[in-house]
Length: 393
Ligand SMILES: Cc1cc2nc3c(=O)[nH]c(=O)nc-3n(C[C@H](O)[C@H](O)[C@H](O)COP(=O)(O)OP(=O)(O)OC[C@H]3O[C@@H](n4cnc5c(N)ncnc54)[C@H](O)[C@@H]3O)c2cc1C
Image 1: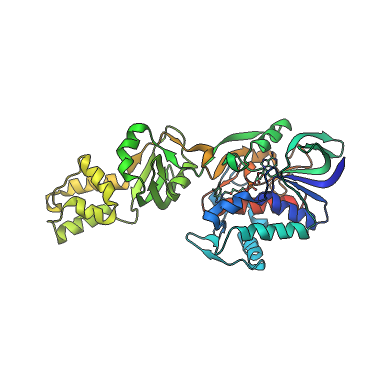
Image 2 (image 1 turned 90 degrees about the vertical axis):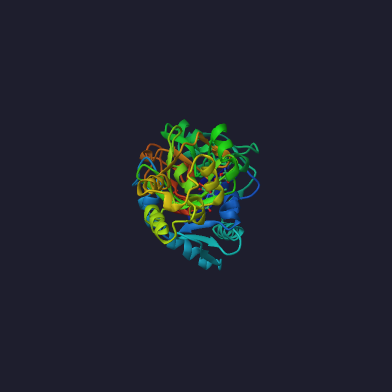
């Protein structure tokens, strides 16, 4: 039987950050990971460049059953703290758009930096090892590992992530642990995920596969101004990934095509300048031609602008600003970037990430019911929550 102060399950972003901090406090730390390498999601994130944080990260960018829960952690370890860390590692970065920060080079630089810090902090990283059993003891927890060994620890940190991308090592382990210790969970579902259509709608939109258009995607009061992409399964692109975290099956999504345009004023002004231009031609200057072509096939007037009354232009503008689509489902955990829901934040201390009913048991990162928007917010939550738990575990 071996013993350590802190056992952390999962060497992703949150688990590594937590291990480094606990190790720096002089705690003996064992970081247990069941796949071959640490930080696999970091490696594939941001198209291989890791969108590691967002300049504008605040609690407003997160979805949770308790919208205040993440405030403390985000304040104690901020995006500026992580940017500082990136700078100290000499990793060059740039802002792509909307405050999203990416490595200039490769996401591997982030993993290498973290692994270097793990080493310096004296953390034992144990790869290709799972946990086959765990139980409470008088002074902590006893784990049985997949290599048959046992490990006693005073603090147990669950950093095993969510269910998204099972083929990369995602498991429901963290949720099972929570259940076993009587810690409540909120409903889990895929987030930041492409949405799918029924076969008839797919046939209708088939010619649009690969077409992209700027939209304002809305669901209730929540809206995102980003690109939409038609795919051979349905809809994707940042605007759809963002709204997918709010969308529920059976609901529709409202799309404002080119939200920066006042369509009625634009069309009316164009009619005044040159009324002999055909309506589809004019629309095709702002919108993808294949989309306009589809509408023509479905009855859009091919007449000149001069033939369009104010009322007709108003009706068309209204449709362009409120194009309603009704997805039938999502691509699920196979492609979802995150898992919504998870360990109920009401059961955790927001300062320490410790379970209120189970001293010594901590939950960090994606396994917790805190989900960020697309754009670096999810890694910031992993860094912030991991850092906080690392101060107390
Ligand atoms: C394709 C893709 C791209 C993404 N891009 C970005 C991005 O650019 N920016 C951003 O902010 N977010 C991005 N995300 C989301 C981000 O990757 C996650 O929010 C983040 O990785 C969560 O960190 P975590 O440490 O909580 O969990 P994870 O990174 O999932 O780490 C959990 C670790 O636990 C291990 N594990 C699981 N079960 C067990 C077990 N039973 N025993 C031992 N180990 C176990 C897993 O193998 C994994 O290594 C992306 C996600 C995906 C899927």
